[in-house]
Image (tube, rainbow, N blue to C red; front, side):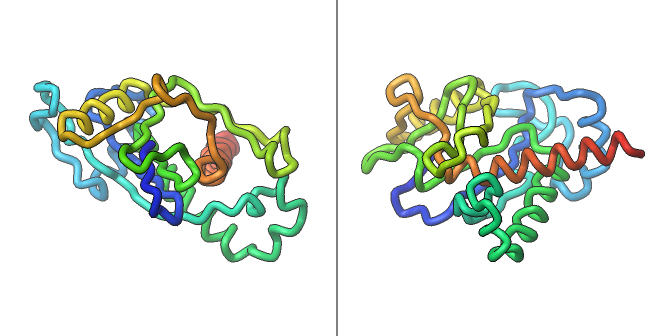
Length: 196
C-alpha cells in the first residue's frame, strides 16, 4: 500500500480490523488462534466503538522474483525450490493468522520522493504479462475503506500521501508474487477442508 524508494523486498502484514465482522467459520478459526494474536476484548477503538484491539497479527518480508511463478519460470523455478518451499510455508502462516486485511508494500509500486502511495481502489488487477505469462492473473479485492483510513491517518500525522484517486495503478510484480502464494495457500487450505 505504501512504498519507500529504499525498500528492497515485499512485506506482507496481516491486520486484524476491529470494525469488521467476518463469517462464522473465520470467527471460529480466529478464536482458535486468539492466544497467539495478542487480542484484547472490549477495548476502545480509534472510532470510539467497543471491540477487539486493532493490530498486526502477522508480518513477513519475502522476495519477489517473477521466475518463482511457474507460468513465468517454465521449469526454471525448480532451481530455487528451497525458496519456493519457504515461500509456501510463509504463505500458509499468513493464511493461518486469519487476518482481515493484507497490507503489501512493494519497491515496484508507485512511489514518490516526497510521499507514500496508498492504493485506495476497490480492486487491483495484476498479471505476469510483462514476463511472458499474460494468462497468469490475479484480480485482488481491496479494502478501500481500510486504505482510505490509512491515507487519512497519514495526512493527520502530516505524512504526505498520494492515493489512487490522484495516481491510478495496476498491480506490480512485487505485489503479485506474494499474493500468488497466499492465494495458492488459501486454495490448498480450502481443498483440504473439503476432503475431510
